[in-house]
Image 1 (cartoon, helix red, strand yellow):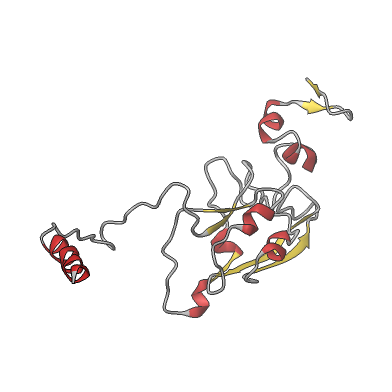
Image 2 (cartoon, rainbow, N blue to C red; image 1 turned 30 degrees about the vertical axis):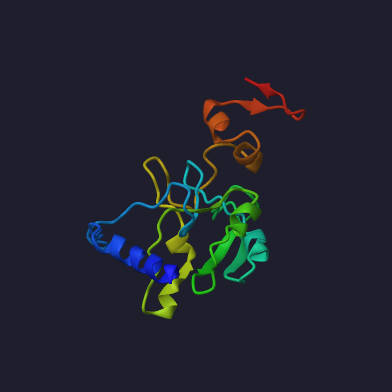
Amino acid sequence: MFDFFKGFGVTFSTMFKKVVTEEYPEDFPPAAPRYHGRHQLNRHPDGLEKCVGCELCAWACPADAIFVEGGDNTEEARFSPGERYGADYQINYLRCIGCGLCIEACPTRSLTMTNFYELADDNRQDLIYTKEQLLAPLLPGMEQPPHPMRLGKDEQDYYVQGPVLARQGVESDPVGEQVR
């Protein structure tokens, strides 16, 4: 009999509380800073893509939601600093479970997850995001690929020393010590 009154106590206590109404589409509530939402393919500071088409993210995905097809860079058409780039990149958000294993598998930190969480749609085809939809926007000072490497003479300048050192004109000798 006590449980009966205990249950009604919960009902009566919430009945007289102020109702909180969120105006969701008009008042867009921000997500938590570490929330994992939509994926993003990042770029180097000169605009070249960080993705090298290694397909490790696709292998790490337990839901088989990622498709990557690598392509070879040429001197005339360079999309990333390395030998290869992600020529075709797709994420199927009908399958994605948001686990973040693809982020952990990426060796170049090309793939990250943003705070954007509105991924619902009424068309199944619109939930398969292509490379063009996933690429980070070009910031001021970036150039649309394909173009030659601007931050160094080889991929070591991008990945080992980093773009900051390449911009400062710091080169490294074969042993790995910095030389001005």
